[in-house]
Figure 1 (cartoon, rainbow, N blue to C red):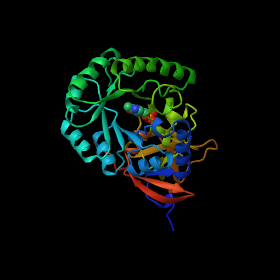
Figure 2 (tube, rainbow, N blue to C red):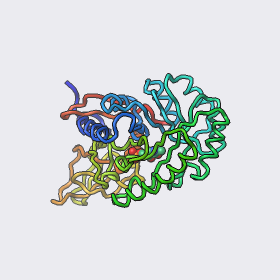
Figure 3 (spheres, rainbow, N blue to C red):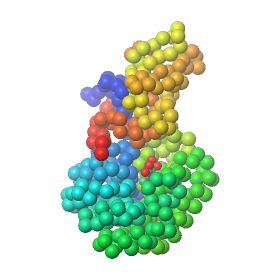
Length: 338
Ligand SMILES: Cc1ncc(COP(=O)(O)O)c(C=O)c1O
């Protein structure tokens, strides 16, 4: 008989198989096949990527690190892989291209990143700044960089522009307007660049792209409380199961065995259905009494929902897939590290 999640040591990443599949189906209904390029940075697991490919019918993926690219190639999930990020590591990129039977593309936004990609056999997308102060060239620079890339012998497939400053905007009207503004910039850059492909977007803007060819979303599969504020049609599929290791009803708190090292905290504390989170420290989360004034007892299990899914998953070695209360699979988080 399969174990239950409750019988395994904590902290434990627990993934609800049915909710995951509902998220895959909800996304595929709006962005089928190549209209979505799932971003593996959100879950860092080749087994989960394989499941998404089979069920969702998507066979091109995005990565954020060379480690993710290497793992996806080794797993044979490399039909069309995009490093949606900049790299200067020519040798490693060339090895990835050499080992892949598929198509490898990398984002470039400077002379240096073009020089690094030249001769590796990778194709490129010109990464354009569409409003988020991170990677991406100024829109007016995109055409010049595309010429430079072609002169260096690179195939330029088009443009990429990630509107990361917009994807978490809770007001849908404001999100719509901001995506429109960002895509105006990307559209003009594509005219200068040529190549045909426009790659953009994320979970919060998955249904707002009527122009971009493909959306790069990953969080939709597992979700977190930050994205839950947007009222998207995706369910909280992943929790971190914890155990109560100390409880002090007289002093008014109880302590769980997972803290800062088990959660990405940049979007705030994780949440519990019943208990209010007081604070997190390295290995602990302290919770306050519920509305009836009661606290969990020592040995009780408490499921916490992360505020930011990507860095939370990266804290753990494996994901336990649960169906009807039983652990039916264990998917290694094998794309961790750099
Ligand atoms: C380049 C890029 N594309 C897309 C995304 C979208 O991911 P999410 O599904 O979390 O919105 C991210 C997230 O950080 C990203 O860095």
